[in-house]
Length: 143
Image 1 (cartoon, one colour):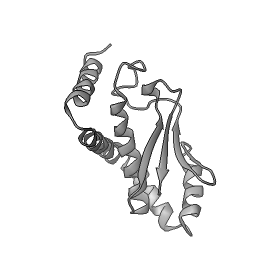
Image 2 (spheres, helix red, strand yellow):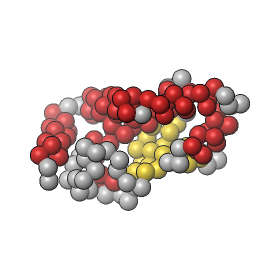
Image 3 (cartoon, rainbow, N blue to C red):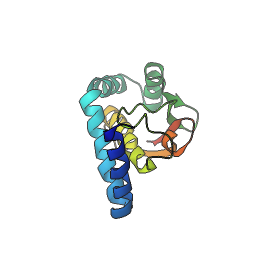
Image 4 (cartoon, rainbow, N blue to C red):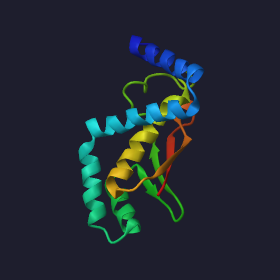
């Protein structure tokens, strides 16, 4: 295991030990928000243009799911499904070795994507996580 991976494990253990749940969530969500803005700002901009050129939210979600294949839409659910962990900081760490607290970073990433697209607040619920030992990450988006 690389040194920075061990550092992240220790950092998340420290977060879990010393920070209130709300503080941990906010800190890690902010990391995810900055990550998408730094590395995928174009995705947010393209989603926002698509939203502005859509008839309504349902139309936008249908169009966006064709462009962003991790987005899955059913009658009552908007979800992001990732078959693997894309975070280069922790994706080599075996499941169960790092606290799932870290996955709040992904929640922030998804929040920033949708809030940037539709210019309204959304809620994101982490339902499954590779870090927790699931075979995928599943984040439900509530608009």
